[in-house]
Image (cartoon, rainbow, N blue to C red; front, side):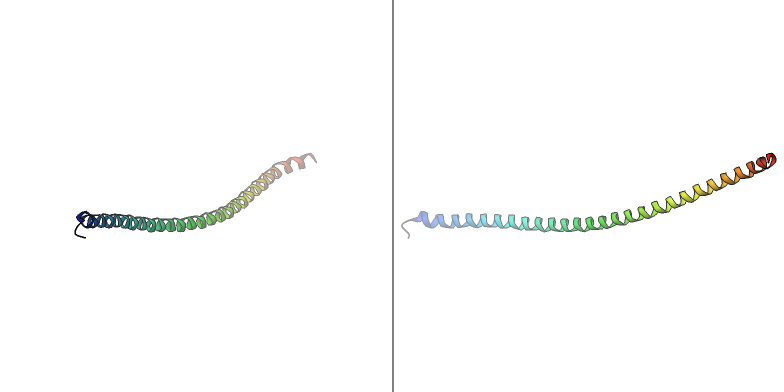
Length: 102
């Protein structure tokens, strides 16, 4: 054993080198795990926001349909009132004229 000093002196350096590489790999893995957890949290938040936006869009669509129907009914009522007023005005003007000729 003492005849070959290169084996004994080289062994601790090689072991230290391997341990340093293991520590580097360990640090990289810790960083990767941290990044993965952050990405998972971001994806989860994004999924929650997407679900919320989808629900809001569905509610908005439902409300717009209701408002569109209400506005159509108001427009129809207004048109019917205008038509009735025009017919009434024409009747007030034309009936006396027609009665003069009959």
